[in-house]
Figure (cartoon, rainbow, N blue to C red):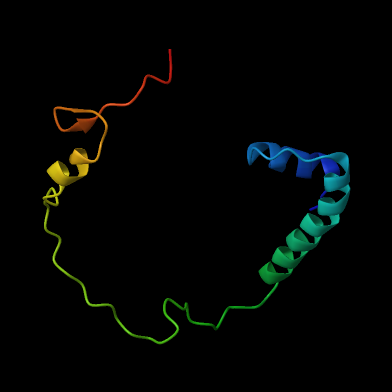
Amino acid sequence: MSIDKEIVRKVAGLARLSLSESDLERFTPQVAGIVKWVEMLGEVNTENVAPLANVVNVDLKLRPDIISDGGYQDKILANAPESMEGFFVVPKVVE
């Protein structure tokens, strides 16, 4: 995949980053190098390699799933400037 300044500008926009022209000049080859490296990983033959989930091969102890409200609602809402019917009251953001 060919990476140019327009692609870097688009990705930066999606990430809500504002990049100057000098930033684009600097980052474009870096992003191109990262993409090239990731493409190289796709060429690695992993056909006979078992999937790895945990480096030390130790199973985690599972706990039973118990549904609860946590018992902290009153303590948490006590720190809120305003609450109503068990919920935080916040200023209106969207008209």
